[in-house]
Structures are given as C-alpha cells and as structure tokens.
Image (cartoon, rainbow, N blue to C red):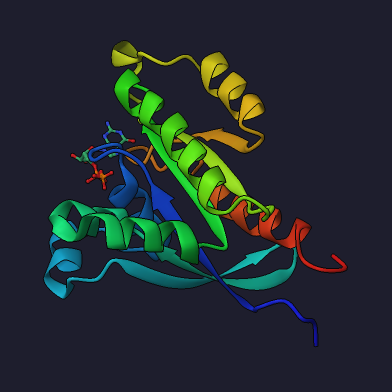
Length: 178
Ligand code: GDP
C-alpha cells in the first residue's frame, strides 16, 4: 500500500460557455444534458484504466455553481480541493484564453508550495472558421505557465479521452516514489 490517495479530485476551471460541462459529460459518459441538470450534480466519478493501471477520478465542474451565486467561498474552495486542475478556454474566444491565464495565476497564489498538475485545454477546435487563439499561442502559454496543453473538441469527442488520461498520468508522475 502506498501513501498516495487512490481517488483524485480534478477541478475544471474556465469562463462560462467554454465547454466544461460538455467535457465532464463526455468523461462521465452522459450524453443528455437535461438528465445532468435534473439531478443537480456537478461531480462525476469514474475509474479509468491508463497504462494498465486503474485510477479513479472525481471530476468537479463546481465553477458552474459559482455563477449561481456562492461567489468567493466556493471559488476559493475550488482552488483548495483539487489534486489536479483542468483550465479550459475556447479557441473561438480570446477573452476566455485571457481568463485562463488569470486562473493559472490565482491557482499559483493559492497553492504556492505545491506541485499540482495543471492541464491547459483549448476546446472547440471543430469551429475552425471562428478560431481566435492559435494552437501555437496555446502551447506557448502552457510553457510560460509550466503546465500541460491539449486542444479538444467536445462536439467531435476529439482528444477528450486523451485529456483525462493525461490528467491521470500527470497525477501519477507526482506520486511519492512513482
Ligand atoms: P460551460 O459553461 O463551460 O460548462 O460550457 P458548456 O459545456 O455548457 O458549453 C457551452 C456551449 O458550447 C454549449 O452550447 C455546448 O454545446 C457548446 N460546446 C461545448 N464544447 C463544444 C465544442 O467542442 N465544439 C462546439 N462547436 N461547441 C461546443
């Protein structure tokens, strides 16, 4: 038995509308948005088999709740509880890309001493003609912020599995002795 937790909390951050809920739905295997909202849940648990080993992720889309009015308390909680963070922007929305940088800075301030995995995600790559943020800009930003980077399309289900597998690998890299 290791000293590491077998269950990891992954928090999704990012501007409204960038596709966080869509990505979490794909992760959870839920297609029907209505179903999600009826249950009023914003946390999904799934065990992924990555590189021949199972890891359970608890994915929290709690940033959404913040919009419903629990402002700072929930916001700071989000920044405290994650074992890993997925910061999402839309490649069609430069403002969301700028917010992603701000979130990264906030996260660094909150969790200074810790080496937490952060993955920067440029979503909506299917909307080719509406692209405002190039893949090179996304990659460069990730280098500056010392985090991983991936572009996804929730609509085409492109790179979504790879994103969450990447989260698992980043967590394992930081596991004591691993
Ligand atoms: P959230 O507010 O960050 O949780 O964003 P949502 O998941 O609710 O998505 C906002 C809108 O963008 C919805 O209408 C989604 O259907 C749409 N959307 C999300 N991801 C994609 C994507 O990859 N491509 C396209 N074309 N639309 C997307």
